[in-house]
Amino acid sequence: MTDKISIEFDSLVKKIPDIGYDWHKKDLLINANLNKHFIGMSIKELPEINEIKKDSCIIISAGPSVHKQQSIKKILDSSYTGTIIAVDGSYASCLKAGLFPDYVITMDPHLSRVVRWFGDPDFEKHTLNDDYFARQDLDLDFRDNSISHNKEIIDLVDKYSHRSKLLIASTSSSAVVNRVINTNFDDIYWYNPLVDDPDNNNSITRKLWDLNKLPCINTGGTVGTVSWVIAAAHIKINTIGLVGMDFGYHNDIPFNETQTYYELIDYVGSDIDFKKYFLFTEYPISGILYYTDPTYYWYKKNFLEIIDKVSDVRTFNCTDGGTLVEDKIILISLNDYLVKFSMKDLN
Amino acid sequence: MSDDILKGNYKIKKQIKEKEISIDEQEKLKEELKERALASLGGSMVYVERDKLFWDGSDIGDQIAKE
Image (cartoon, rainbow over all chains, first blue to last red; front, side):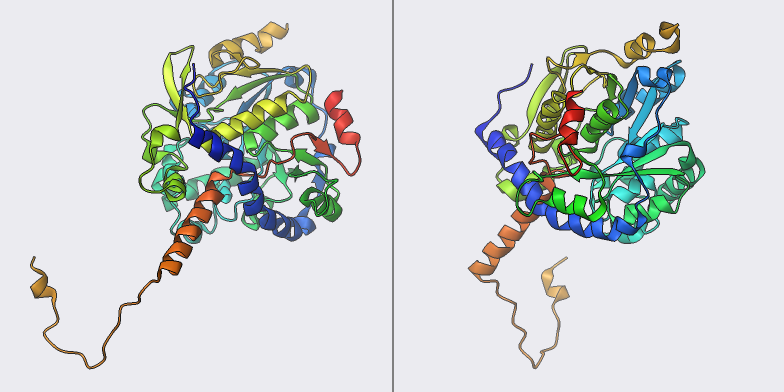
């Protein structure tokens, strides 16, 4: 059950597409121009996978439930044989636990933050005056912003990146591109984000395509959603389990530790009534309350729109929490999903 | 600790004026903060195109989605 949406919440959600477009459009083209000389294989060149891997997949997003529910450990302890896809934000957690994803997907064009997920060679410069990682809640080690933790990620990625295929947006930052091409990913596949209608005048999508001729994929605004699109439509997997796709926060996380807390204060003013900008949902399997902010709600809305566009795909929410409680998504515990789609069920 | 202790016990020749921020500048600063906030609220990637799922320089992408 979800609370009623306030007028203020709804009004902000409606503004997000234009806000995002205005904010990102310049960086997208700058980044794509800088990256064009590094582009090798296109996502269209992804090799076919075997039937066992094609039977099902798990997308590990970077929501707080991954940590709270020990989802990666559950996957490792199971006999799951399907495909594992990690978004950039969960990759380090996978490696730390000893799970080597088949695919790692990155998309966000942010100039200095995203590279942290791969270990940042310019850590001190990039973290100066930025408390983003102090407010993320997947891997609490990132909160300390420590040099030693960053070094651990650099070492892990250097050691194990050859075991995963990297799928990267042409609009990723130079910091990310320099890092991933200088570590040990053997197979890097590129795609363009489809950000606007290519038939429109001055379309950014068309400019990206003119620049590099890579296929353009609608991202729904977040790396978890583009991972679903790639799994369903490019790798052609029709059973998809979602892990860490919280689209929100556990009830015990204080508002001031959410990712848009200060931004909401700046936007609304210091007299903000947070009850109007956070929306609570009860997760039916556990009865625990979760809440979402306008940005995560927008991501969720987009995700639900996007998954309607590919037919014959079953989507299971195995997050074991969060706000993705919708008719078109099958709710199931991760343990049940792992049993249901393990090797022994194939035989 | 009393403020008096922290006061200088000498006089400076040059008068230092505190920079006054005009109401216009304050408004501009407020707008800048708001803009910055909107940037973070605006998501990790643009999503304004709601019809097409793929595009590859032609209409092929739309067909892939329907397969």
